[in-house]
Image 1 (cartoon, one colour):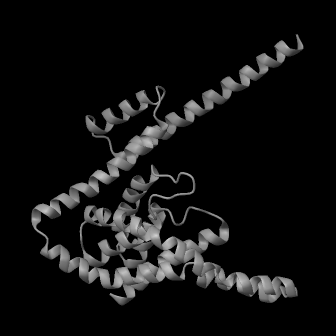
Image 2 (image 1 turned 30 degrees about the vertical axis):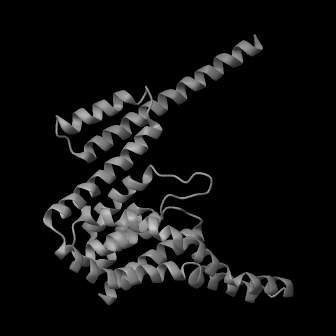
Image 3 (image 1 turned 90 degrees about the horizontal axis):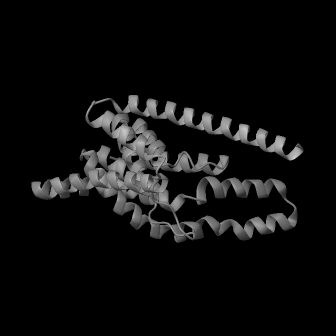
Length: 257
């Protein structure tokens, strides 16, 4: 379990590093991070499906006033890692990932404190005008210190947690395991409901109903419905842009009349 746990921690660290260097917030999203973990651990299918499911869970959750509900990055890394290493079902992995993400949120102040240990040396290097030393310290902070603690925690969770999870799940009664699987599936639905609530309006109701009919009664594949939705969105966007141009033209003619 040592090498797979190291691979999970490495996937978490490298995605954080890429996002930090490029100024993105994309690589650490569950749908990307889960895919990277699945690819490195040799179970791409589980990584993609769990990543997409956790993306649906966290997509509707946003921070208010600087506060976060959960650390979706750590939750995704540990949840997907334990699902692959322990052999538990994806629904059970999702049910584990959400509370783990909430617990790992408490590590953020400590992680930030560790990442800021280079503040005094950086200030001294800046005062001395030593550009090379300053650059070395910046890269050392970004590569090593910034996410050293949380990466180590994820490694320990996956390394020791896989055995604990396997032993614990073997001892759990079947009815409780079924409950965990059901709750994991419900979390995805709740996430999608929160996202739908944010964009729900009288203009989107027909599209929601059409999508429901296509998937439920006509049994169309999800990919086909997604492509159809993209085409409809593009048509609506193009039409609204054309109407706006017409309104601007008419308004300009009235102004100069």
